[in-house]
Length: 166
Image (tube, rainbow, N blue to C red; front, side, top):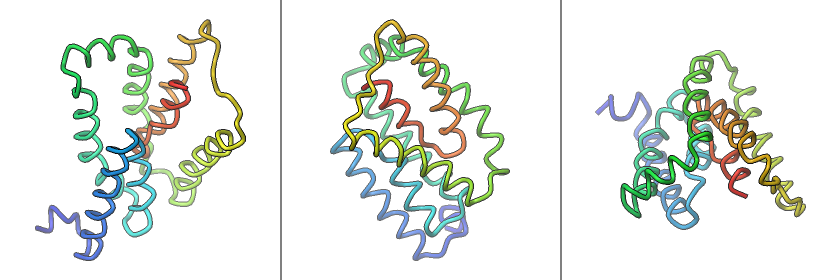
């Protein structure tokens, strides 16, 4: 049982389970935000490396369910269509995951909080984030790289994806 709880107290384990259920509900309702909710809440009572590890399996499972809900052929078509974003994200997750252990906790929380706050502020201010279609390929690569850099250290790559999809 200690392996399942990753050394957490029973209270922390059950709090993590409750947060995961809430995050899963939000993901089911709006289609995204699960890793952001998990990492934000987990960081309040778990060490960052346990928080990051704890969000991986539920996020992977829900992303796969979401990707394949219209069938395998549609999932492949979508992957081909957004291949630049996906390649940039996956490649830079592998790169940035190597530096996770060297980021201090305060720096880590700022690294996560500032861009999300900026994105929310821009959205609330009504600033359009739409890029002209002629910049799509560069935007897809650039936002994929940014998503991968954040994804490797936090498991959160959604905000750059949302900017791209907008």
